[in-house]
Length: 366
Image (cartoon, rainbow, N blue to C red):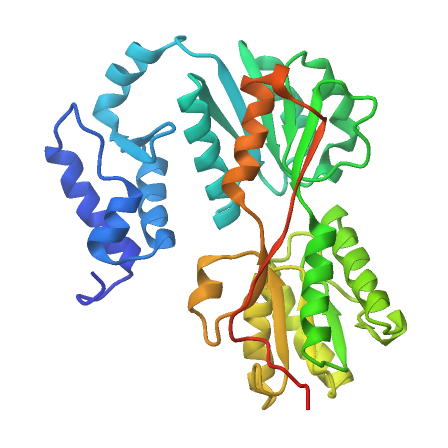
């Protein structure tokens, strides 16, 4: 695909539309993974094509199996499954994100294996937190809730979540779980991630390191900064030597846009910077362009490092060094709180970070 003009996602969409008209009623449509493999295309292109078909009402996702069923099959499928399995609500933002897509897909998989069905509730950026409350109050037969949102959005509703009388699992850190007997948290160790990113640049001999806040300030960025400063102290570098900006990403601003804008500003104000830490790989990715535009090469002149092993981070030029977390283990532990609450040894699980070295960091040791 891709050789006949037009976007790859449009070509996949047109091909799928043809398949829907003739597809065997007893078979699911080809899975996203199969299409990726057969046609040599990206997950984003396949997901975009299926997303259009879902929005148009032509297909519906076959929960937990990574496949879709044509709309003409929906009634037959739903009738057979109706009310047969307990429901778990997955609350997330209503925009495409590789992380959200992966988390939702894994939730579907583990819930399906355990005999549960998932219901997705998408929260738009312009929505108020009260919409989560309204939806959960109106939905009957809920066996659990998985919340894939920044927990600062939920502080006002944390006691309400506890009042649902079913297990609630947050996929991001929360300030205190002590008074919430039914609320649990399974989240990455963002402080360790910040430490590992800073330590990588320090060990490689960088002397002028900057931190760019390419996502809005929240509990994740707080943890990153704690880890970064801890690494500076451990390596006998004064924390004041870390170049920081007063400006950071604004609420609703895409991390890549913020990373580009803030990096351009950074190199104007601090042209000697030789290494930059980002809250996300999106910011590091956009920074490469901002640096190139002022004649700086990555990594020869400036190294960049961020968080999240996204597909683009592996294939951009240069491939980006990142910290990352085991998403499958994170979601497995989260679903265990719901389907096997008696096995829970603690209210919180912290998933450790790992470092994936690629070509965006250059050793400056002499």
